[in-house]
Length: 205
Image 1 (cartoon, rainbow, N blue to C red):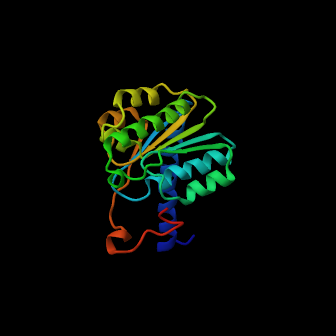
Image 2 (image 1 turned 180 degrees about the horizontal axis):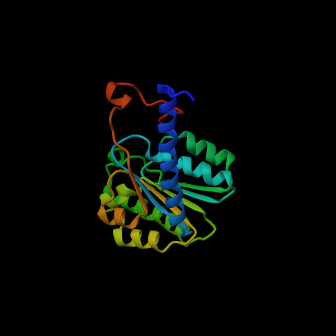
Image 3 (image 1 turned 135 degrees about the vertical axis):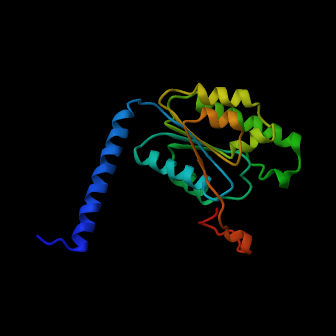
C-alpha cells in the first residue's frame, strides 16, 4: 500500500473529519428543545436586513405565514418590499413610512409614527398564526427612546412559543441582547459607499 504524502494527507483529513462529525453529532443530540427562537442581527456592517429577509424566504419555502415590520425605512422603495407585496400574499408587510430620522428631523412626529407602527408589530407578536416576525431596524426605536424598552422586551419574551422573531439594527442595548437566543454582529470591514460608489438597486435596496 502506498504511503505517499498525498495518502498521508488524505488519512489526516479523514481523522479530522471523523472528529468533527462526532462533535457535531453530539451538539445536535444535546439540542432537544423545540420552540421558536429570538434572533438579533446587529453591528455596523452591511447585511443585517438582507440576512433577515433570507430567513423570510426560508419560512416561505415551507409555506409559513410571515410578518414584516420595518421601522425607519419606507420613503424609498426596496426590492424586498416590491417582491413581497406583489408575489407573497402570506407575508404581512408594514412600514413606518417616515424614512430616516435624520431626514424627518421631527422627534415628536417620529415617536408618534413609531408608536403606531409598534402596535402593528405587537399584534403580530401576539398572533400564533405567524411562524416568523421580522422587526427590521427596531433597535433604533429603543436607542432613540421612541418606544418603551420594557414593553418591547415583554412582547418579544411573551410571544407564542412556536413563533420566531428577528430584530435588526445597530445597538439596541444590553437588555435586548440578553433576551435574545442568538445574537450576531455584522462587522464593517469595507463598504463601497465610503469609496463614493452609489447604492445599487437590487443589491443595496
